[in-house]
Length: 262
Image 1: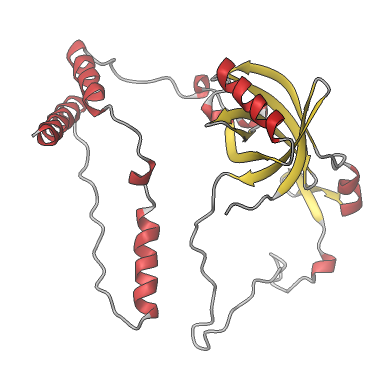
Image 2: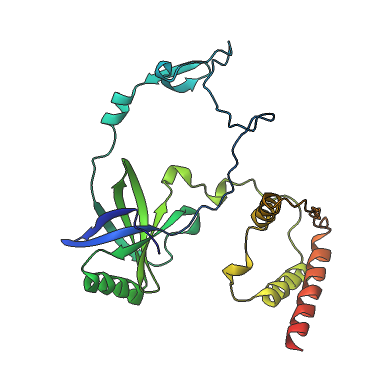
C-alpha cells in the first residue's frame, strides 16, 4: 500500500482541490556499509583539513561558494534561511498546455496525486484533462524547496512530474556538428527496415536491473554460508561498420519474427 509523503491543494481559477502526494518511483539502489577489515565494525567519515589532514569539528565548518580559484564567498545558515521560499500547501496551476508540449528532457521525478476528500472533483479534473489531452504547468513549495512541475492525467489519476529548470536543460543545437559523410540511400533503407522489424509493445518487466539482481543473489548465497561460483559477464561484441551492423541486426530481427510466427 502506497503511503502519502505530503499533502497539499491543487489550485487554479478559484478552485481548491485537496490532494495527497505519493512517490511514483522507488529507489532500489544497493547500499553498502564501510567496515573495518579486521574488526568488521562500522567506520565513520570525518571532516578533515585538506592541507593539514587534521579533523575539523562540525561547529567550525563554514559554507562557502567559490567565485574563482581560491576565493570564496562565505554564507551562514541564517542568511540562507531568509532566502527560503514561504511555506505553502498550494500546488498552483499556471497554465494548461496541449499534452506532449513539454519534452522528455525536462522531466525529473514522477509523483502521483491522490484525492484527499472531494474525490468527485478530483476525478472530474483528471477526466477532463485526459479527454482534452492537456497537461498543466504548476508550482509548489515542499520541505523548504520550490518546485516546478507538469500535472498530467494517467489512467484516470493525476500525476505530477517535477521539471528541471531552464538553465539545466541543454539543447541538441549545443552538440558538436556531425562529422563524416551522411548515410547513403541503402543505409537509410536498411535502417528503416530494421526499425520496422523491431517495433513492438513496451513491456517494462523486460527491463530489470540485472547487475542489482546478480549482486543480491550473491549476498543471499553468502548470507546462507554458500560459496557461489561467479559467472563472468561477457562483453558485447564490438561494433563494425554501420551497414554491416544494420544488415546483421535486420537479419536477426527477421529470424526472431519467423520463430515467433512458427
